[in-house]
Image (cartoon, rainbow, N blue to C red):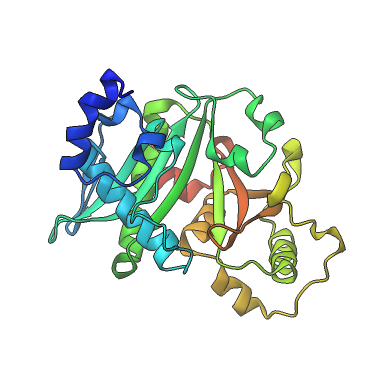
Length: 284
């Protein structure tokens, strides 16, 4: 029997073309969606905001579907054109609009430990020790940028948004899954060793992949890869994390659904590099 909440939501869902399976993933927060924090930062070409309406969310989920599923070839015949999960109702969604088209061209979801004790990264990694460490934490996830707008200006604006959100939540730690579009264990072992040699790796907090995400790299031989090839596999946003002072913790997780490996990265705001602190975290 249809519940009162579903009866209220169904006309709304039909109007907004909500995807198949929405009933399963439905959250009352989506009916009259408002962000926890409002942000608005403008540049000449772009505008950064927090998603403020359900229609904003649908545009976010469509963009994520195109980036994470269509571009990677992970979409299936049952795909409904949207990428969303149970964490999308727990977070704020940072969005970047192209001012010329008014379309969302970049997005980031942020989950603060002040408002949630559940995080996406826990699906792939044992984070118990880290999450019990004192200090507010902010999970950054589902970052994607439309291929026509993958430029320094958009990444710079994303960092400005992160900086403001850190200030608003008083967060000390930024963490999340950072993806590389490879699934070969030998290549994953090579990149892990490269990050160790480059000083971008940390084995603290006892962080490790769990269950089906564990690649068991201890017995895997490294692939023969030139440094320039390895660098080319590391996305610009992840490179900017390392430049800011982030570290990859533990071995990567294998995400078969999205055909990638994920490193768990953590940025301790007490260890942020001086350049990033001056530019993006002046008030934090």
